[in-house]
Image 1: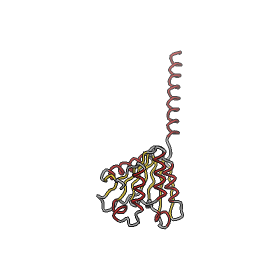
Image 2: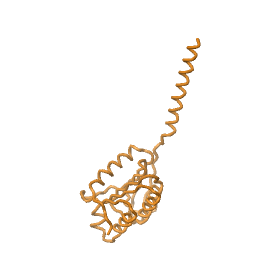
Image 3: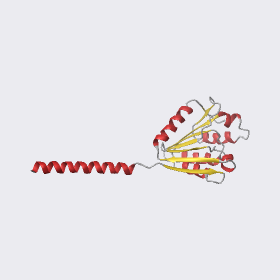
Image 4: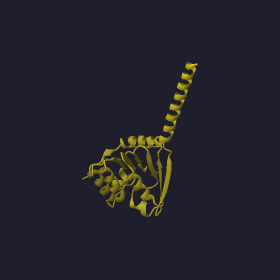
Length: 187
């Protein structure tokens, strides 16, 4: 009889341990969330800047147009906080067709701040626009990182937080595209 009671106590204890472990795992897993914003005047730039500001470990940017001084400042601030920041941009949009000099100024500021910048020219257009933060958050949409997008264009921003599978796919794409670019060295 004592053996049966001992076995019953052991089995009940194991079941409790398994239940506690599974409950802890369920609480630790985050439920993905989605946030959207629009421009002009619909909070798109604010959402992009807030997403960059939330970074604690890493930021990867892939951009078609990169002229926004606010985004440049946010990335430099993140770098100064100790965040590993890297940026890859389209060559044609940011150099060949940059009549204003804003893209060169923004990318030069990043490079001088110690942020690696790569320039990709192997595609007719590197038209992707996204940021991956801490391997778990993706900001994407039509929004170019430019004053034009923030103030005048009809653009959209989508931020998906907490889905590492999606973030991993974007990071793999960032690595594949970036590997085809050249390191930018500011004059």
